[in-house]
Image (cartoon, rainbow, N blue to C red):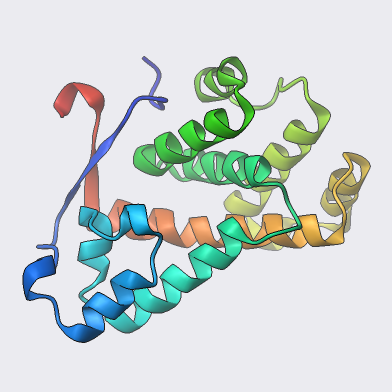
Length: 190
């Protein structure tokens, strides 16, 4: 198995998560702003120690990842898997790689990306999204008009490009939180 996987990866927090049964009304309200499937995860319960930030983060996540129009959801999932790979976040890579496969049905493409990277991705749009995501993640200030032009040449319009930047920026933050606040549990450790 490569470092990254399509298999389920767990996460062990370094801080004690908030217990749902003893959470304050503010913490519960913040958790309610998060996607339903994530509200009781150890990660979100850990973030609930700061309900103001969690509430804003949950709302932003919903807007960035589930907004109608703009960048197709599969491209958002590809980008969030790639930013997570660049940042070394095994948990987030697994989650978003699996979502990409669910949306596209193209498990071989994602497995190839997980195993070999995206440099040889044959699909021009996916290649452009992945390459831009890597550049923006590694050195945000070094992204140029030429990088944007490559996205346009691959068929992305202005809103799709902006959505891509939002997804990459949000996951740079999410990866840093996850990597700092806990450790991944790989399938063999679960």
